[in-house]
Image (cartoon, rainbow, N blue to C red; front, side, top):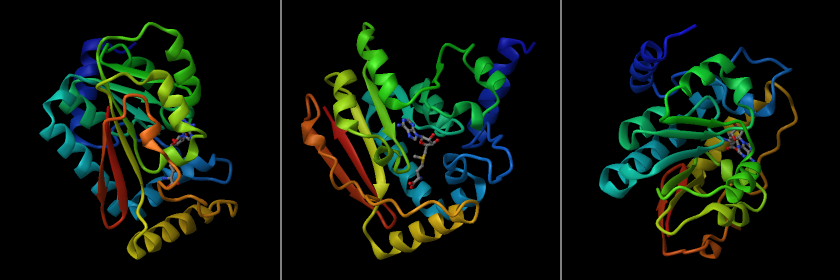
Amino acid sequence: MLDKNTFSLSARKTCLANDIPLNVIPGISKNNSSFMHMLSKKALDIATPYLQEEKLILEQLMENNPKTRDMNFCVIGAGPLFYFSTGIRYANNYIAVEPHINQFVNSSYVETLMLDSKVTVFPQYFEEFCKKAAKKESSAQNTLYVFWFNVINYIESPIRFLNKILKKGDIVFISGWSDSSYAKKNIEKYFECINEFKSEYNLPTLPSLQGINVTDLNYFYENQVFLGKTTEIWIVST
Ligand SMILES: C[S@@+](CC[C@H](N)C(=O)[O-])C[C@H]1O[C@@H](n2cnc3c(N)ncnc32)[C@H](O)[C@@H]1O
C-alpha cells in the first residue's frame, strides 16, 4: 500500500507541475462515454484557446481576491481532477464533483489522494451532491464553485440546485463558449473531433450562457462578465 505522506508529497509535486496531474484517461474507443471523448487529449488540444482563457481569469480572480484563498475550492464536472493544481496552490484545498470519476482516474488513485484531508472527491452528479449537501449541516467556510468548460449547460436547473447549498459570501465561477465567430469555429472543430469517435453528438443547442439567470441565486450581489475570444465567463458574488 502507498504510504500517505510519500504519496501526497509526490502527488502534490506532480500536481503543481502539471494541470492534468492524474491524466490516465484510457485510449479513446467507441465504447467510451461521450464525456470521455469530450475530455480526451485530442479534444482538449483543440479547446486549448478556451482553456487558456478560462484558467487565466480563474487564477486572476484568486490572485486579486484574497478572500478566495480561505474558501473551499469546488470544481463541478471536474473530469480527471481538473484544476487540482490551482486549488492546492491558491486555496490549499480541492473538492471535485464528478459522476464519472472512475472512468477518468483509477479508483485507488482517488482513494489515496483522499487520504489527504485537503482533497475530497464526490463521485456524483451535481444535482445529487446538492441534495445530499443540503441535508447536512454546512461548514462555516465559504465556497468558490467552479463550473468550468461549459459544464453548466449539462445541468438541468443549475440555479435551483445551487440555491440548495449557496451561502452568503460564496462565489460562483461559470464558464461557457462565447458568441464570437472565432469561438464558433473552435466549437465546431471541437465537436467534429468528438464525432470522429461516435457520430452522435450535436452542437449543444445552448452553447452559451443565455438562459441562466444568476440574478435568481440566493444572496445575489453582482455578476462580473468577461467576454474573451473563445469564452464567456461570469463571476457571481453573493
Ligand atoms: C460537461 S463535460 C464538458 C462539456 C464540453 N466541454 C462542451 O463544451 O460541451 C465535462 C464534465 O462534466 C461532467 N458532468 C456532466 N454532467 C454533470 C452533472 N450533472 N454534474 C456534474 N458533472 C457533470 C462530465 O462527467 C464531464 O466529466
